[in-house]
Length: 179
Image 1 (cartoon, rainbow, N blue to C red):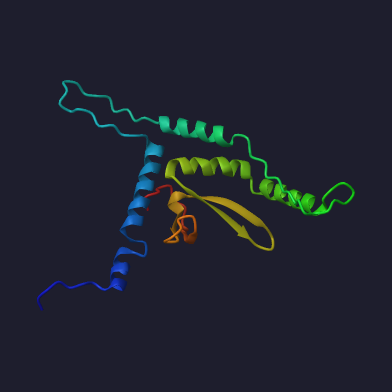
Image 2 (image 1 turned 30 degrees about the vertical axis):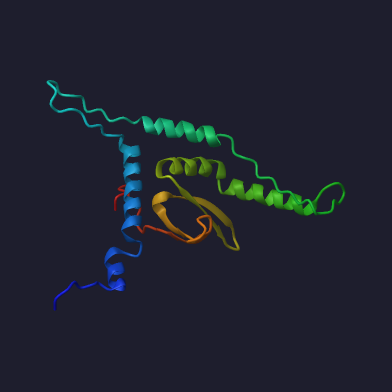
């Protein structure tokens, strides 16, 4: 039996996982970004010097990201509904007003000003976030999912077209993000 044995694709995908090395490496980099954010950056120093350098971890990135996200979304943007083709009744557009009231109620019940700042915060650390909207008969919920909480695929011929997104869920809350 000379020659190389080629592992079938279905076995290879089972060994590597459904997302492959590239996606797993990207998720590993995102986890490293969160670690740097939480624990500070570690700097290498010249060990041949005749002194012992102080081991000081820099946490300046936390302040920078906090200030940046507060600057971007400190004032929550207005979401205005406009129905240009709707006929006015008594000087108002009833459907437009009802939709605007509903949008305002949804934003308030979902605490969107706080979530928007936190979503921008996660985007500055991980490089991306997903806006996830869940609709049921009882409520409409909106949340931002950080970069380590999902993977996505785009169309081969159009990177602006989302083909698939997979969200990760954990069964146990754990402070250790590496698990």
